[in-house]
Image 1 (cartoon, rainbow, N blue to C red):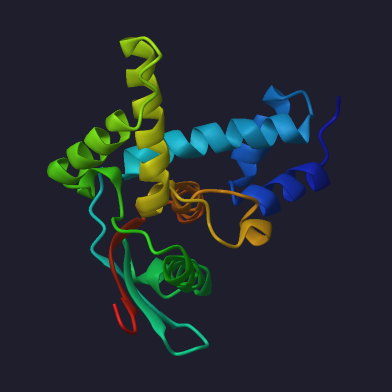
Image 2: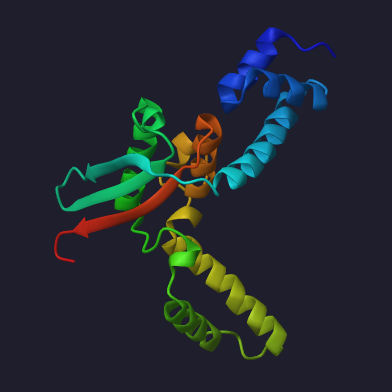
Length: 199
């Protein structure tokens, strides 16, 4: 199947990949754009993981105040260069994260930030709720499954963005990986503070 310049451009626009990367992915996928998109996504995640080792010393602090003036968020999002930090796309990403934090109220940025004692306490509570009529190994699997579900509720990177239509059900980590792939830089959500009147 012949791959046209239009095919390459469409894939580039959709993924933010370079021209040659998009062309190679289309060739590898025999012109199937969905398969090419998946190939680029997997390669992008691998590249983003490598970029994760590089220092991210630039960035922005984004803020969001909810329309009722009762919830506010500050979030620090870092990248490697001031050039990327000043782009509208990077600033919009940071603001999208602030909006999400206001709505979803995560407690920690990543799973590594969850204190061990908090994790153990939750595990104990969930194991006590387990169905005792099941074998112990089944009870343990159920507890671990519920613990993973709990982490998805309280850890920012594991949460699906609250604007599911706009972000097609992607998690914050997937969105972070995407902008890291597009910019070619290590992008890190460093920390956040969420304020709610009366809390």
